[in-house]
Image (cartoon, rainbow, N blue to C red; front, side, top):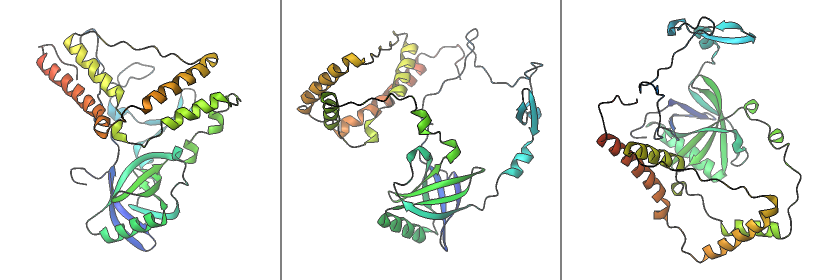
Length: 301
């Protein structure tokens, strides 16, 4: 991928076929607004330090190591060399162990997605695997050491290449039975159920990630801009939760609103991208305002 550095380079093996590949991060948080911790008394940035819990003295980096608590305030020391020796050795190979139906893996096990691309010498084998998987409607399960951990990876055809998603281990996924054990045993039927189904029917659409604004980031950008320009800060609107006695009335009102909305023009693709434009504009405005309002006072960060 031009302009991006591979997070991992190695080999993809299926049967007796091997080709060189690279993993590239598919999702990033680098564009989010970030804040620094500031001393309110001085306006200076606060640095993070490590302090001994008993002596309250600063502990320099060379005196810090890992420890596992075996009892209250009792630890066994594990140094970096011991940890490195315990990490499984990597052969830099994503070896496919099985091909499975694409929808067989519950997405609760999904961890992090990576774009999987071939190197210059492995294109033919890579494309053969991609096309065969797509026509067979299967995904692949592979295992390898990624970033010093043994990982299980789900590989699926995606666009011109493949997407490799690291999977959570079974012990890392919490039981859904425990999560929903306090759910009340209710049965909704009649008009209430019909109205809910009607609302769903009028709201059917297709997933378009470009049509969703990151409202939190936009709100942060607007907040920063308002603070810089000395304007009034936005106030949070109170959310009213529907009460059981009012639920049917709320459903009727929603269904009525849906019917009115059906006669209005649908949202265009251009409008769907407007949210992203507003976010970028807000961030840009905040940056320009910060430059124009700069003062001799030390800036945070």
